[in-house]
Image 1 (tube, one colour):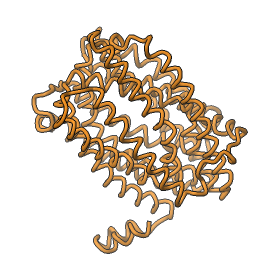
Image 2: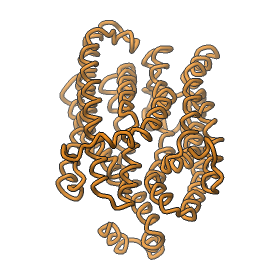
Image 3: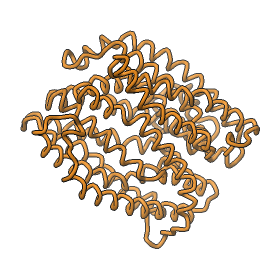
Image 4: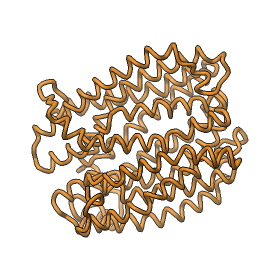
Length: 462
């Protein structure tokens, strides 16, 4: 990133220049990507916070809850990549580390081909089932909305299907330890969405169809432009080609990918079913305060996600080169950052009432208990991600696989028990998630220590 370094030398103090220009090459790439990602994510956060009150005013809290639930349901289909995205991420990084460019291109082309086949089949199934399914019952809405929901599902799923395949350009950039570029897609998409929704508020009455189209189309537009830009330019050699499709590599991608896939399914049950559980138990209106609190405390996990994102593929490269010293150094620094984020979470919790009032006014009320458990959730996710990124990066994911299955099995019944039986409402749903992910918070650090100290045997090193 020569332009980035030039800007730093021009505008920043000498100590900051040293921070970004000295150290291990792998660490320097991570630092530059983290700095750029913070800027981009900052823009994205601001836009997303502006979108919430604007969207609620454009439709209403109930319809906004319906949209959030539909979005989370569509997110379930992202897991039909059967883990190939993460498999490609590791395999592509390994191929680059070994300077085998033809193999890297074959991995890329084969993954594109498989995902195109998978999503085509899924899309046909959705087209067939859409007229049969009772969407009003699924989203717990008045029957009068059935036709509107059916049309919305097809529009949104069509754009999602395109995004399902096109998003691989971001996977490749991240595998090449350039996540900052991938992180730029979100803010650009959000800016487009913000402009379109603002125009909608001035020219139309509240419509889920218009809203869903705007929110679904903008990421696809960005990914199409990004694919054209990179595959005709810097990444021209890696662009997908029929010539380089080789299904014999499917086993290598899928062997690691199937484990990621099972983990993703478990994470789907653990993280992505909350909106549906709340909708079924309390109605779509209750989804809105839950997601507002989730978005607020998501700042913590987003910050740490920006910091850790470059290290997945960096861990892959370092482990391939047996650079244990660098891995330990990075992990120790991430632990220090974690304790700083605990303080940030506490400050956010204490000031949450004031923030909600200034952000959304009296449109939606957020229970204190919900904010407390969201804060705890953010802390637990941050701690576990320190070690899960390392474990995922080195491909030793058998233990996380089993842990995720246990967590997923426990999550839904615990959510219903706390939310309904104990009368805790939506706060009970996130409490159940906190209890489940605590298992990984205990075992993943142990696995990291075993691997890094060459003591990982059996399930710990598989």
